[in-house]
Length: 119
Image 1 (tube, rainbow, N blue to C red):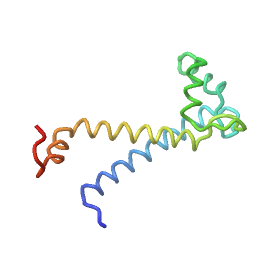
Image 2 (image 1 turned 180 degrees about the vertical axis):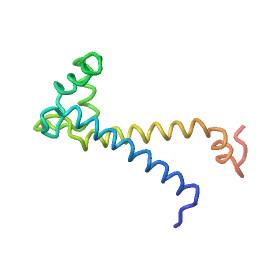
Image 3 (image 1 turned 120 degrees about the vertical axis):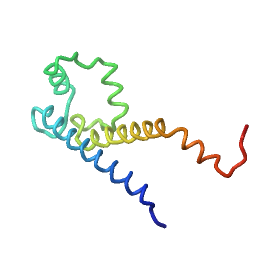
Image 4 (image 1 turned 135 degrees about the vertical axis):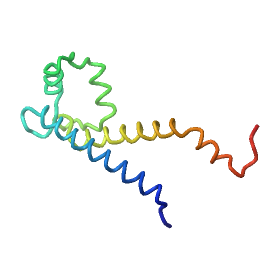
């Protein structure tokens, strides 16, 4: 029940990256939450998009956003914890996909190392 040095290094790198992501999300949230109620509603999100020169969210965009976040009906919008959790998971997924892409060959050789060649 120990962790290898390589695993520890990867864990530390991922942790640093996730802390940076959380800081950015927190700054974004503070920027967008105009009324300071600790929720982002679609009007606030559309105002931020307009400020950035982007189009407001379509109804389909809103539906998609609501489907991926766990916004309860009694809530006033998206809270920071939901946003951090969603973006954190998306970032982890992207990091894993990038790692797998960069190391695909070495991973395949480890999978078959010592095993009978499937071909």
